[in-house]
Image (cartoon, rainbow, N blue to C red; front, top):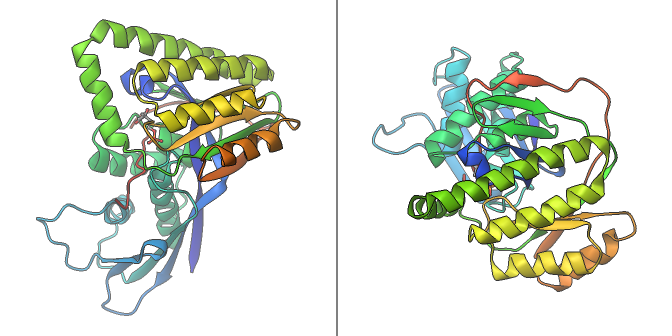
Amino acid sequence: MTVACAPGKIILVGEHAVVYGRPAVALPVNQVRAEATVEDGEEGQGVIVVAADLDLTLSLKQLDPDRALHPLEMTVVGVLEHLGLSLEQNLTITVRSTIPIARGLGSGAAVSTAVTRAVAQHFAVELTSEGVSSLVFEVERLHHGTPSGIDNTVIAYERPVYFLRGERLETFHVGCAVTLLIGDTGTASPTKDVVGAVRQARQRDRERHEDLFDRVGAIAVEVRQAMESGDLGTVGLMMDENHRLLQEMDVSSPLLDSLVEVAKRRGALGAKLSGAGRGGSMIALVSAETRDGVQRALASAGAECVIHTEILPETGPTLCLASSAAPAKTDDWMI
Ligand code: PMV
């Protein structure tokens, strides 16, 4: 049996603008994870994928060419093709995930990443992070249309990333420990719909939106520098400003706004929605002193759950890679 995992993710700053070629910063969230196991199946069974938490079983034995593939099927087909293997394998692939679905935490990309890694490892092939990211991006693209590629990148690399679509991917290290609380609104964030709404709004008023995206892009540049130098005060201020710009893009919601406000009132250094918005999650940057108070305040203000995550300074190389196939996302893999 082969087992592989992948973390969740949050977008620290830059969502939506990243779709239009501005930079964004995203972080892995190791406190939630997707896991895939691959076992040899019975002779003649073909490939069976079991999404254990969803009570969903898919058989890839006789795929109907007229039926759109489920993202899990696409993932398996993509990785087997990449490995030069046919669909005639006898495999049982079981997927489990603790990542809340459609909350801006990258559940779809994480599940695809775990499956891709597990299948490759099962056939004793070591894929690079870049290879995994590209394969997952293809699934995201087929399923989602126009993902920026940020989700599959941060999840496959499992490091903080500064992401600029189609141009370059840079991972970086934080200069000090960064503690974030993730408040889940309990409402699904329909990424495809919200991205579509922003696209339509931009078509109606291009100049205003390009200006908003430019301002968000400038924030991402500043946040990356501030994260590297350990200047959390600046990171917090930039998160607040990014939330205001996302409100101007009309992608916030009353609950997101009130969770952001509550977090700020309780002493968070910065707070904003994270991901597509209109639901999903918000994030708050906290210190050791403010963490518990903010966490309690978010729970009493209506957050369905609050996840605590920490990014620690690390040694080791930062990476700067050409992004060949832009890496991607999909939170609604099962809806
Ligand atoms: O809600 P999420 O995690 O799917 O984030 C969407 C991020 C967007 O920038 C809105 C879209 C994208 O593909 O980058």
